[in-house]
Image (cartoon, rainbow, N blue to C red; front, side, top):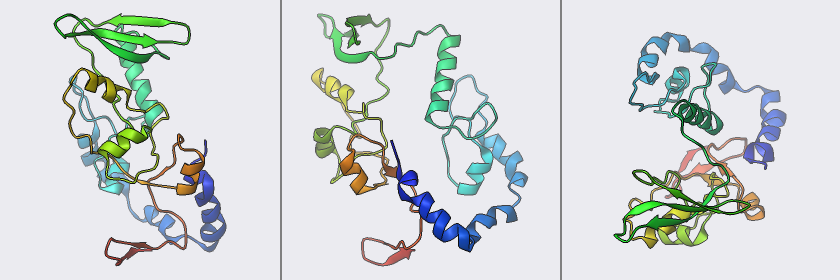
Length: 228
């Protein structure tokens, strides 16, 4: 799977910009970011047993002036999705929680009183039923790759996104079947995509979070130039 960076940006940047000298790339050396670390570490470190704000790289937060929620690698650097999963798995292992991979939930199980008591899931070989001790919690209710749900809930047109291909809204549909109340279904973290690439591979991950490269002009909805 190729993303925008592989698609064109790095090639254009290396050939047309870096060779001529990129003044922006030298700005970082002009600022002593380490001077801000004593303050930032107080904000970014999470030592509470209750959890909360994940550890993030303070230096990066200071540069971007944003409240970033990223996991920290063992080396103290910025981590991404795989690092977040590593943290989750370590916590689960320490607390004796079994992780079942390749189990696709097919149905929510309820008793005669309508109370949720478990789940029915399928694996490559068979169907299994999992009984809940106290509750069933769905933590991945996105529907990026479900065109019907996108059309129903989002202000379109929208094409693809950065979610995994399996992000197809199964839990949204199952929740609706038992008349669970859904909220904030129109909320989304949106970004541009490479349209041609999205059409070629609709289930891929093609989100472009930053406009990079030369010969780019951006305008607002009134046609006024933003920057370029």
